[in-house]
Image (tube, rainbow, N blue to C red; front, side):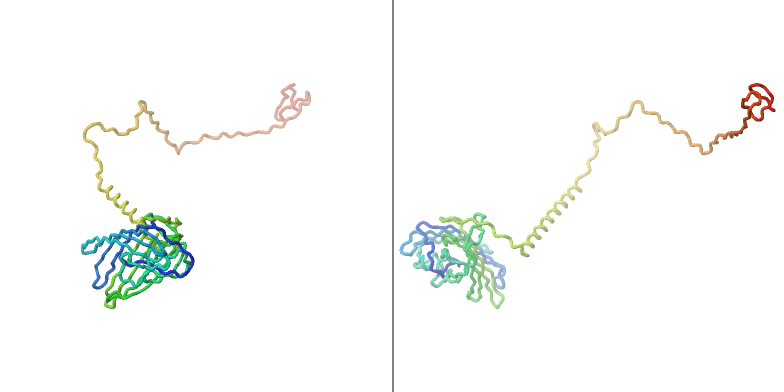
Length: 335
């Protein structure tokens, strides 16, 4: 590689995977320079790299390799350049050091290869990549492979460092991901901050991921969400965006409705209106009789009940009124 990437020296002595003839990987790599300050303010550049590395032969612990890549370079001034590179080199499968030549690396002193490590390393072990010390963080890290939008199991290592870059002081962080079964590269992310006491500086990033391999990668599940504040903030932002979209749609519909003209009735032709049918013999309305609040009440007849005492006739024994002069039966006078 023509740019800063990874490599290492193993800390253990356990037997590790040794590549065979025909082992290869294809990769994509993107570098960006942005966030310029001072004299770098407004300047940006990007390089897109498409490359491949292949093992030609392995003999007596020495692997013979070929490499080839093409770098397409652009910046904010409109400069466009395509830079191809290819060649051969060898490295030791035991020490992981370049032996004869490199894959077009510059600026390193006796570096180790960046694409292959001891796959038997454990969490906490250290190794060197190029000239940077790395430490294994996990041996079963779930890494999202961008080329296939899926997750694979990896050995995850991380390292930090600094160096003097001309008049700038550079600090960097490197995260690297390797295949646990072979130790070959799966992906990495390099981030560098360059600054000076004069206020000049920029941020340089470099990301790489494999797009094809001769070795099988192990599928993995996505890592569980940690539910931290950044996740919650992301959900809130997405919800706000959704609400804004809904409001925009409602406003647009409202404006469209106001712009529509009320349709006029036609001046010609038949116009049918929904009129309820009229009965041929409508019922005659009857006026209710008036209310008479002064009507006279009928006279109340009084009935007088008189009580009459009955007595026996002394001649025939029949009962007769005490006021009668004669018996209604025998006609004898009441004595």
